[in-house]
Length: 372
Image (tube, rainbow, N blue to C red; front, top):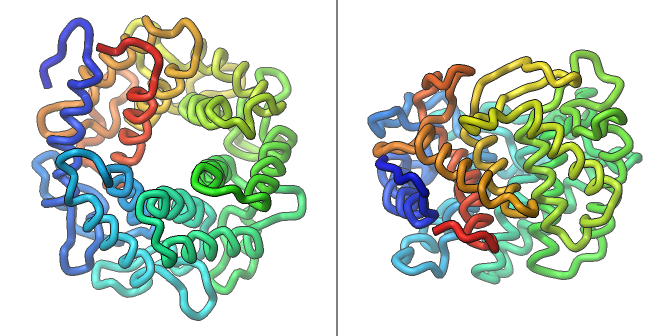
């Protein structure tokens, strides 16, 4: 994809709407199952399916719901409706409640465990979809997902189990950062579309528990596992993702967690971002040493989005927009991962990645910075 010295937001938006979204309308769509394939190769052929995940279906539901009402996106409501039906038809567990993790290529249940990450994205997607269509069935699924999270996954201290057995029996997984972050995102999406005292209370309890159990006291970074866990680490991309959620929320802004992540942003930026190339490292030890230098497009997108809410960041924002455009976007789609030296290390294009690009571009579109 050609790039100018001063990248334009319109350029990346055009790339998204004219190239990336159509990939999931055409070659990325399994019409028989009415589900997105898990990934396309560099030539837009579906990778041989091993599974279909409810989480991927939910992320694509968000993608197309976000396009409803936009010019030249008449297709969006039809596709969103199909994805919503597929979420229920393929993944809902009529016997035990909740949603399965995955089905096999023939459409039969594969991994029937219940994971918080999946349920968080169902909440997130249904809240956004209901905001656009206001159909009672969509709100009922949103309510069912919120209820099952509160009743089945919740732990007494305000946190939630990461994974449970199909029948909700314990697997002793304990809480993990990433599903909890996306649960917070789902709660915020719900509060954006309706007043909900129970969800707001759960969100604030979650923020309090994350501050207590996951925030390192030295650098205020959000760890991936609870503080006393062995072999722990932090990811710069998740510091930026949390910062955006907290900074953009009237409910969470001003909480101790918000203050911590504001400081964590600076540490993650110092230790995990190359200030010449804009590369965001994958995993860091607490002392800031790199454990995994892989550059992932989602982390690039989250850093870019978070910068829209940081004061005096226009120059860095322009650098990061150029880095995304030059190093990750290309005329056939995107590079999912680069290695620590910037060479392409993963050429497939997962169906889950457009969610990160869509939320990033929404943040950029709403930014007060001049991105022409």
